[in-house]
Structures are given as C-alpha cells and as structure tokens.
Image 1 (tube, rainbow, N blue to C red):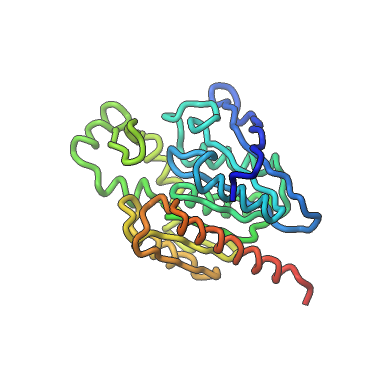
Image 2 (tube, rainbow, N blue to C red):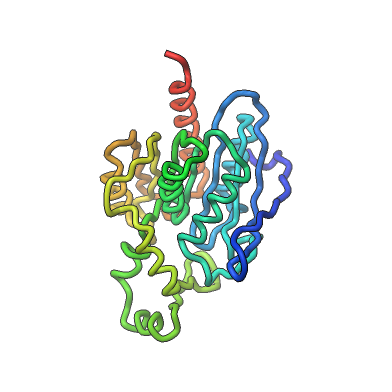
Length: 274
C-alpha cells in the first residue's frame, strides 16, 4: 500500500521552555477530500517512532482514503530533539497535545501502539478536560496503559531496584534493538501520576483493541483488564491467537486497516442527520 506514496517532509514544533525546551518532529498528510472526515493520528510505543511499519501503513491508508494523517516522534525518539532519559508519560503527552493543537484537526481517530495506547487514553482525558479535537474513535494495538506500575514495578529484581535507587535508572535487554531499554525513576514515578486503570475511563467514542495472545511484553490479560475500565464505550477486543507484541505482519496490518475503516464507518453514520 505505502510504496507508491511520496514521503511528506517532517516539520518541527518547539515544546516547553528553558531547559525543558525541545524540538518535536511531526508529519502531517493533508486531507484530500472536502468533507468532515476525521484525521488519523499515530502514537508510537516506547522507543518506537513515526517511521515504523504500522505508522507508515496508517499513513498509506490515509492517502488511499484521502484522509489527513498526523504522526510525531516523542522527544528522545526518531527525529525529535531532547534526551530519551528525560522522557516521562507527562512529557510525551504534552508533546502529543502540542502537535494536535498545532495541526488543529476538527475530529481525530487516535491509533496508539503499546505505550502509545496509554498516551491515547490520557489524550482522551485531557481533550475532554481542556477542549480540542473531537474524538471519533480509537484503535489501540497491544495497549500498555499504566505499564510502569502494572507491568514493570511488580516484577523488578533486587538488582534493578538497587540500580533505580542508586543510579536513577535500570537497563533491560531489548528483543527489538541491540541497545538496552532504559527505565528511569522519573518515568516510573511520573507513571503513577498518569494512571488510567484506577477508575472508569470515558473516551466518549468507539474503541477497537488489537492484542496478540503470544505477546511477551504486554499479556493479553492486560488488554482484558483495560476493557473492564471502559464500561461506557463501544469496545471491540480482537485477540490474535499467534500474535506477538508488534503485530506488524501482513495479516496484523490487515486487522489494523479493518479496525480503522470500521471506526470511520461508525463515525460517518453518527454524523449523518437523523
């Protein structure tokens, strides 16, 4: 799908002030249609960026359908400035909000992968509180809300706890990169302040979750727990029996495309006058 699509050029947005200032890279594919169709917004996972397979395929889908698509790199990721070790959920959420406000779409479908699913859920809360684009739907791929407190902290070894206390971070071997994953004390402490699985989450839009059952990083029970916290929303959970964490195989991409199209149809029907 995406091979025939010319690459849009990244833009840069200044976020934060003083020592917290950083340049955030983002790409906006303008809508080709003249209607009120929602823009697709890609939110990457931890240590992933907007050039990954799923992000590019989502951009390709937007081009095929004439929709706008917004992608960004969090600070410390991809083309963006800032140090990765300074990253927290609050910081990356601030950047996503800033890019959304700059691009100013009227309606959006948030598509979040892994940690991007957590960012998407927090974005929904902040947009409801502060105002901004209207949510038309969400597609969450192996979502990892509250992963710092739900998946990391309970499984810390004595060595990792000591490293956090003495060095302010610990390292963990990555399956996806020769460089280790780095988890800082600031990330973990900030994660507690951004928890979403401690009450009802009201997104006000349809939600489709795609989750692999052979995901070594985010167990499918975590996705099922998230569903329990979305009682007011129209939620579809698709479990991929042999799916891993990335869900980037052709069949997985087809599921992602189908989920986005389903939400687009639902959104179009909701916008029609009675």
